[in-house]
Length: 80
Image (cartoon, rainbow, N blue to C red; front, side, top):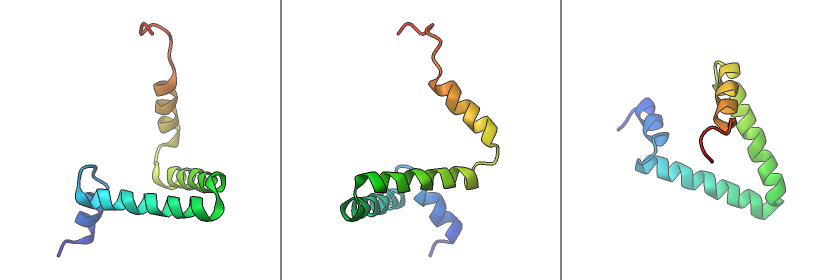
């Protein structure tokens, strides 16, 4: 029997069977939401869940937002 910490670690590690099952369950929940309340409302619920996870799970929110902005910022010098 595996302890809870190992279980969560495997469930959130891409490439593990536990992570695949977790992703499938999340997909099933989203599909049921889309079929019952509609795609738009399900997307709004998903966005608010992501915002809640960000607020609750990220310690340094300012640095995280700066890294995201730097990722999307392009200065044109990369040749594209």
